[in-house]
Image: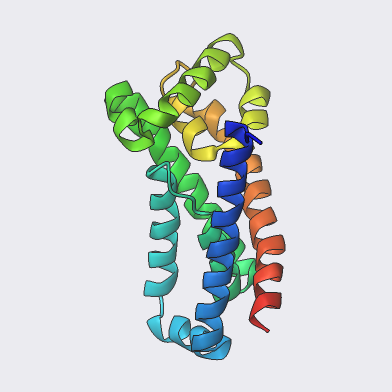
Length: 190
C-alpha cells in the first residue's frame, strides 16, 4: 500500500505534535508545575520578554512552529497572560516577516523559508496578486502565518492592510492553541 505525500506529511506533522506535547508534559511533570511557575516568577520581566522573543523568532524562521511555545506559555504564565504574550509575539513575528520581505526581497526570504517552502510561497504570491483584499489575506493567514506574512511582504499590499488582516486571525490562531492546547497539556501533566 502506497501512502500519498500529503498523507505522509500530515502523519509526520501529527507525530511531531504528539511528541512535542508528550515531551513538554514529561518535562513539566518532572519539574513540577508549581516549581515551573516559581521559576517564571523568579525570572521577573525576563521570563515574558524571553518567551515573546522565542515565539516571534519561531515565526521568523519559517520551518519552526511557535504553536508549541504558545501552549507552553499558557501553562507557565496562565491562559490569559499566555494569550497576550503569544498574541504579541505572533503580531511581532509576522510583521518582521513582512518587513524582511519588503526590504530585503525574495532571495533573503528564501533563506528564512527554505527552498522546499518556496513553491508554497509562490502559490500564495500568485493568489495575493489576483486578490488584493484584506479578506483573502485573513482567510489564508491561518494556513501558515509565517509563510503568508513573507508572501504578502513580496507584494504591493500595504502594511496597514496586512495588519488589519493579521490582528484578528492571529488572535484566533493563538486563542485556539492557548485555550485548547493548554487544556490538553494540563490534563497530560496531572
